[in-house]
Image (cartoon, rainbow, N blue to C red):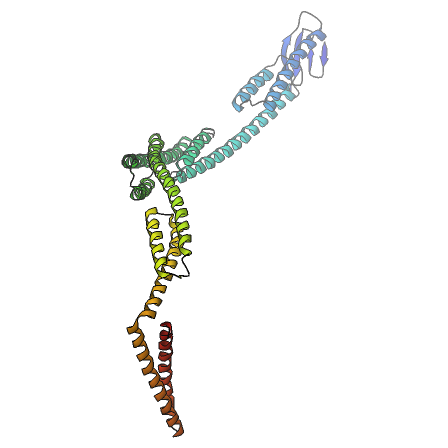
Length: 410
């Protein structure tokens, strides 16, 4: 008979393995060789079970083997151990399988908790997406909000599903928010399209009038009307993109034709008026040589000649007109003053009137002076002061009359 710590072979070739309770269990018989060879054979059977259990332990530890598949594999190995035709510490193998069951259960709970955490995070994430989508549904930033909603859909698709009821409820809110935004955006752009069509019709009319005015030579009123048309254009709003640029090019082109023609005419007129200014400045200089007047008759004849040539010349630039005309007016005033002085000097009736008035004023002044002296001698200063004021007024008139008389050469 042959034996080792975990089994033995009796004289008949029967092979036993020791059990955990101290007893024995027959695992097979061996007739082909020695008892040691029999034990070695059944020990190799045991080693095979050790290898299989070790492989399963590594799979549980290092892979994502599901708990269900792990428990199935453990049950299969436990049946092999319980019914094993092998020699070795089968009880130790059973304990390793028990430990492996505990490990799988722990991992099952860990995964369950992790899944619950992930589900909770996914719920919060989806709720946040729903809240943001509902806020965006009220936005009028059509492009930005639309792009953001599309990004939220992609984010939603990347999140784990919740339980059907919760997931359906959140998705319904999310989808409703997107639909509400799309409906508002569609209504907005439909209204915008209507406004742009109305703007197109208005601008077509404005273009028609602008083109009709482009050949006008009524410069002032037409330029004013173009300014009104431009204000109407801005107030009309934008037409559709495919029409706006073409309408604007026609509108602007019509204005350019008119203003280019006006500029050409104005440039020619400005050149002519600049030449007129030069001629009038020469005439003004010629007229200024008549002052001071020495021969009134000759000066007046010369000024008439100059003025006739002046009137024949035409317009000068507006900003230069006051100065050059002022020079001519100054000469004309000098001639008028000379004429008035000559008339006063040679008019005998006027001289006689001036002399009579001067005599009357002189007599009044002398009389008042005598009255003032009498009043002061009598001590009546109040009357004297009153008479003095009257004297001052008569004296001023006398001085003026004497000056006029002097102009007559007297």
